[in-house]
Length: 328
Ligand code: SF4
Ligand code: SF4
Image (cartoon, rainbow, N blue to C red; front, top):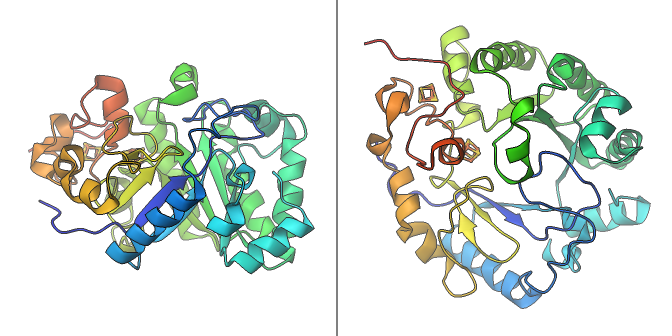
């Protein structure tokens, strides 16, 4: 299968790498004192990039991310410091949904992971403040060995808080997470937990979705034959309908994909999207190797290309955490 003439549907833009937390799994080596301001794109360039994207694909969704995007000066001109004044600005700027991280069902697990005491209670307070003021919330949870037994409780906590959506991220071993190999689960453990998330998802009022576990599509297809898969798009969409822009204007297929595919300081978005060799290869499933290349679920799933790159140096090789082997 070849994805042709696809335009980007979702673009994540890392506006800054500054962040007040110190999370152990961060792909971006963020911290509060990091001085990346000199290499952050100037505001005029940001507006120019927005214009380029808008004229190429008006329907594309732009996700402003970081670091903590609220630490970027001019954030409200472009588009866990939220208080009542910030909420007013968020509403006035037209931002529809705010996402926050929650990695434990208790202060003990969450604060340990985030590296800041009190982060758990501050997060819950902020979620309630946003929801009470009509701002929708997405919670992001990174699944690790330390919190794997709490996943059900974390999902319940989100439901009780009346959040809109809950993304459960599977660790990709890049950035600081390279040192978190001990937190990684075995393929069989991922298989079991993703299946249980599938059951929770079907019965939950919250839109729960595992992220960067494209083979979740295969699990759902195998276990829940009548389940509507359309709302989950097509497994990994990196480089196919999604890409990432770093704080200094480098474009890559996703934030975990450590290859520079073009520089928006000197090139334009459309040219990078259409002509990057990496992007072109990602759109040709027949180039995929190993058991992904032979898998009957390849078009549905695609495997995680960033994880393949991080583990083997070849982004076309098989996803190392999938336990499925196609038997002809
Ligand atoms: S390559 Fe992996 S980390 Fe990147 S978007 Fe796809 S599944 Fe997620
Ligand atoms: S083998 Fe690859 S393509 Fe098949 S389900 Fe696993 S990750 Fe997806």
